[in-house]
Image (cartoon, rainbow, N blue to C red):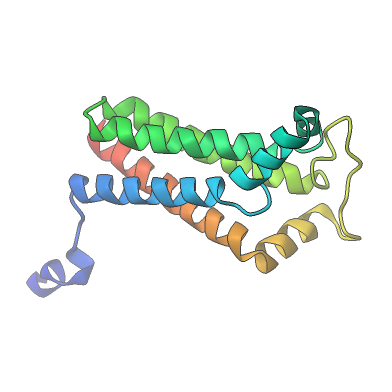
Length: 162
């Protein structure tokens, strides 16, 4: 029994280690959103250059950039000693919004809920379209994996500390 407690199964990361992991994951998720080649900063710059009215057709570039900046800001607040509880709750809410937004966007046919867009399902059911996107888009799959890891880490920290 003592061997199991001292082995890998008995390893329990400290809260400090989990906070470092959460910060790194938050920066990774922020980078994935900010640097996304199709809907990150590069696309938002093009939209502002062409006319902000284009955001009504695809609001994701603005959402990606703002949420990425919010994540960076949140980690930096944690680094300077801001109370952790609101940072954990805010981080979990933001990551949950990422999941909700991703699935809402794809389940409605790429933003078919927007009045200016026609639904586009690629000849598949909405669920098939989501699964196809996640299995063929390495960027999206990586982002969802990093977001899930961040959500789990923040939830674990919240549970342990509060």
